[in-house]
Length: 306
Image (cartoon, rainbow, N blue to C red; front, top):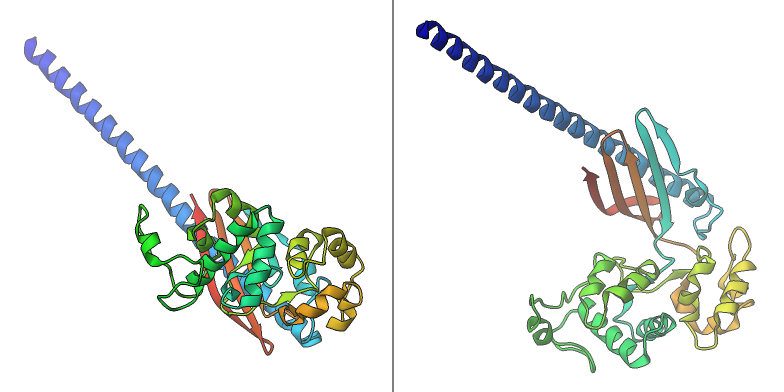
């Protein structure tokens, strides 16, 4: 009787082990299946984004064929419907003019640095602090071990925790400004939509793509320009933009003295793409350059969740 009981117990134990193993195998299969689905959707998202990026480049190319001298908000790149349904989600694309902002890599120029100081003060920064930030940022984006008067030497950054050094080269992303002395998290969040980091050391604001929300960028060009002046001036802009700088100056005369920082056409564009599928959200941010009708991708950032 005991032997039969032991045999039954052994069978039950074996059955329990088999059930546990089967459950574990099923669980692992399920996770492997889910992982495979996510990998597939990530790959889909990447190809959707690549296609959308090509479409963006094509639109910019067509606009250049129509008018190589002007970039404005009535062109295809700015009026494109930015949402497209997918079989299992949604694709969204937005093209922004990357010259409707202050280029941080222009800070090596004394005049551009003065404009940046005004921009900081218009955002509530005290003049002395604005001057210090501007010089420190200029040291960051220019080569050479010597800092400008009022600037920051590498030894000051090296004494921080964690320590680091100035880049002494052009910024690739505006987030690098956060590392510059005097730039707090709050100030960075306030400024980020007004700034850009382009692979050139010049400032060329496209006045044909600026919106009313960009008024500080224009007001920073001259002490004689107010927010009200800029908003009224932009509201009077023709739908196809100003044909010449002189036509633009007629409505805001103080700008005439800053014409070297102004443009009617744009060379750089940022493209934001998002592909949302069942279990994965794929995002891509690209910087495109349009030169002589040709489109080049300068860089792209990609991420996927989960």
